[in-house]
Image (cartoon, rainbow, N blue to C red; front, side):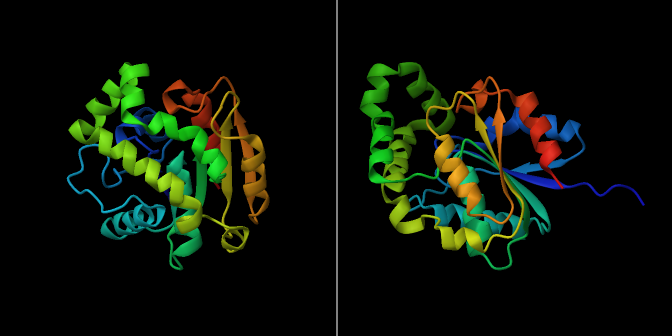
Length: 233
């Protein structure tokens, strides 16, 4: 009997699109995995614009994606907020087909103080003035609604802990392997919050990616693919 091909569903980060994951997906396909992805509503070129950005909404979109594609026994790779969506799905959907989760650069401290540090970078006017190249990149990815995307993402982050925050009790029900990967130069996600969240899980592990910042395009993707392959059971 031939080896069964394992399926990885890749989830993009906040302000991102599925195209951000293409290089990493290619590396995992070279290793023999099936790689699938999609855009959360309101991101990229998706026509659907939600009333409100919510982790719960994105988790329901993941649910629909798995059902539409008749997926079973899948692995989730979630970058940044995508990792949070994957964990939320595993914790809140009783029949979740997720059998393993791997995250990279996923933030778990959504306290008011932590969120306030990020809000300035979600202000379209500030971005346009101080970081015009980043603003242009967002316009290229998302079109004219990039400013609305920023404001909607800021709103989600300000309300995430209250509305969709993952608690210790939530994660104690997650009985699948979860590998948290953190770039050694990540200035957005802290080691303490990552290790704390991993400790709440039955099978949580933390790995460090060398020479890597928070941004996926500024990360050691080949090493990341090796860590992922080693973690997959």
